[in-house]
Image: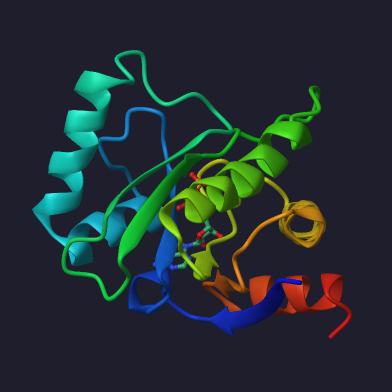
Length: 170
Ligand code: ADP
């Protein structure tokens, strides 16, 4: 069983074995969580992302997939970069959002990470409604077969925290 913990705050301050980045497919940085991770983690993360781009993901990391780098100056050991789907009102992309959580945990298992911190993937620039994103995140982590012992959802503001707490019945 994986324990689920909630924290309100900045994911770059977490000391989990791995923190998950809400990246974009370029792997070359962006705003939100992505910008914060690269700012605080320093240039080593971007250098590894560039190398991954060149060696494996010339067309970019596909939506719903995840890949790891080291964590530079962050307290974590690894950053797991996953690409969330952009919200669509006309197309159901929830399978892709669930895949971000599943694939990130699969990569965490490969690394041997025991503790993993996730942001609310796709709920920023990609505009996914928080309550639906929280439902998908919680259901997917609960259903995952993983050796990860603790998943922490790190929510940036009170409203997001309360939405996740509601999903968890807390
Ligand atoms: P996406 O492009 O997948 O929507 P964003 O980074 O724009 O990703 O936003 C994802 C979520 O992360 C949003 O709810 C946003 O408020 C939140 N967020 C932004 N910065 C941080 C941070 N430093 N730590 C934790 N959560 C953050």
